[in-house]
Image 1 (cartoon, rainbow, N blue to C red):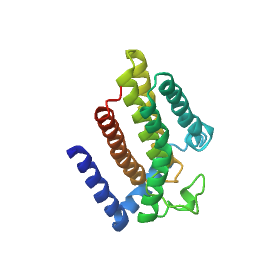
Image 2: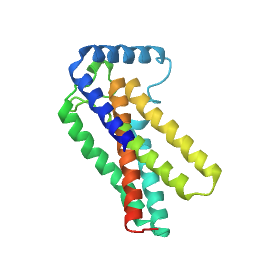
Image 3: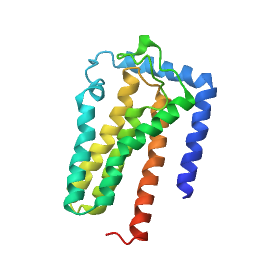
Length: 206
């Protein structure tokens, strides 16, 4: 509980700073320019991957495979939790974005323009962290294969960090948009796992 309260308080304070401190935005823009200049020798195809079908695939894979596993092993509550993550993160992201109303980086920094939406927090980063963190939690709880556990953990970490960094690289999000998404994703992850354990213990669900 203390960890959850701390993360929530940290996210709220971080969000207030984002909204009311222009210096942070100046630092953000300078960091985007630095990244784009340093990586200019690489094609934009690389950071654009999360904007194409790969992003949908990396959401569909855990949802489908996790759903099939849940139904087969009668882990219906875990399945409901897993499938609810995209919807919950989407709704929460909409609330935060329209509350903070932070503009995206300038168009000249964007490889793909997003003229009609706000920047904070990064929805790609939020859903990726929350979904893959929860998948990793389920794998470590129920799988007996050490190799499988380490493989899923590695994929989860690499993919989550790549998605966040790619949003900065192509200039559609500020670095602090991604950090804020990770903070909020951690809050959601803890809420998901703690509430799941509570319900399973309360109603004696195997």
